[in-house]
Image 1 (cartoon, one colour):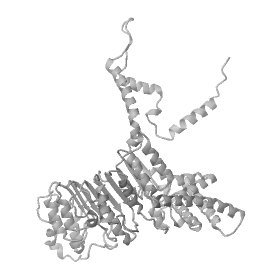
Image 2 (image 1 turned 180 degrees about the horizontal axis):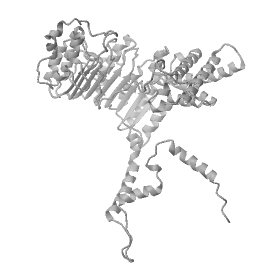
Image 3 (image 1 turned 120 degrees about the horizontal axis):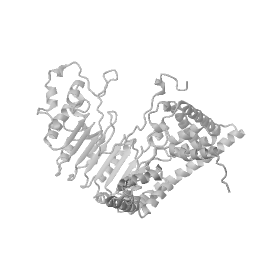
Image 4 (image 1 turned 90 degrees about the horizontal axis):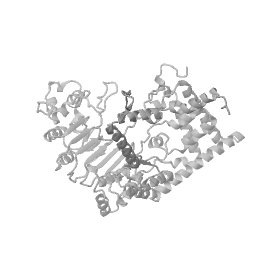
Length: 572
């Protein structure tokens, strides 16, 4: 029986369908055909093929060492295959919903994967109480869609590959966003036409889903179920000793998934885009832009306390929030409860706090007291406190957080955008174990003088010290020329102050003394360097590169071009 004739057109189509998925992504070694992979292993084996020199001799030769290499490789691969499952999940991100908690619970109960988890990150994105009202919810969606439409022009010039698109898809996205805005507008229109009722029914269904998510979130937080679940999961994972909190996990006003659905232009895809946009919890950036009710970040206290109560010996706590809002009473009703909490953090080696200004001043003392309790342990080796990097807001009171206890093991101290007393800084520096790294960036002295601070830092030898953009005390009375002479640095070069405290120059004279005695002191420019007038020279760029071993949370993941500054219309 003869084989049917081959349909080359069909075969070509099948081959194209098989190869197209490979062409859409980067190829790796597993995409190689078996012949090439065997050739690679033959090189490992040192396989040789020789022309026969005699009819009775073999034309193929094997080297015993290469043969053993293949055997060892097979055994190592089997061993690695059985152990590598522990490396699949190192970080688990958790949100305030039951699905996220179920995933964390399943990972913590897995006999192999649970052994490899090192840290748990709590994403501080909340469903807002304001949006549980239908009209507010619809108006919020309209504003978000208009924001997506306004940004579609800038996507054409985007340098970030996942968001960089050509003119036609961007134009399609713009039209899709406008169409969705019209659909939402029909849903809230008081006119009762069949089309209006259809759109309103669809949007109310999405709104009910949002209400259910909000109620689920509130139940988890108010009953303490969320904190207890996280604590129980961490206690089951033997190496998970790092707890992170972050509200800027995706700090972008765009959503790549929504953008992809809107670019497709399909009406069904537009419905999915609207549903996905509506189902997202709000970041604090969204809360402030849309004037939503600010959530209470007290859950940070509750989760840490629940994890500690579960018996987990945390080694690292990192809190990164663009702004903070706290209200309510202290989590420590009595001093004994506070001492017990600090005692359970006896293994804490690292504490990092990166935050913006506090939205509610009454909650500041509660927040500072909790951070102080976390730091009330002698085991800390690394401390990073980073507050607001501008002169318009008061910095964090670092002395209130650090307390007065001795730091026997402290080796790295990073202070940025905080206020501190010179006496507190001296006490930290004079710990029994000398520090290795001290970073003071945009730090404002509350008491003492920077002249005394420079003399003291110079006396402490053997450290890596950085001093950038200091503030307060006599610095506020300096002219811009004096400030630049002492503290300004150009490129990678150290400032005169840094050179002095690191003993990197032969001169032993304090640069503040030198500039005060300079003949240029009587120059006409006597205005304070803070704040600077926009009409004057550009302010000194004192941006610093964070040390590699200090985690830096970026607040601007993508760079946008201002559409108003474009030279040509991107739609032309």
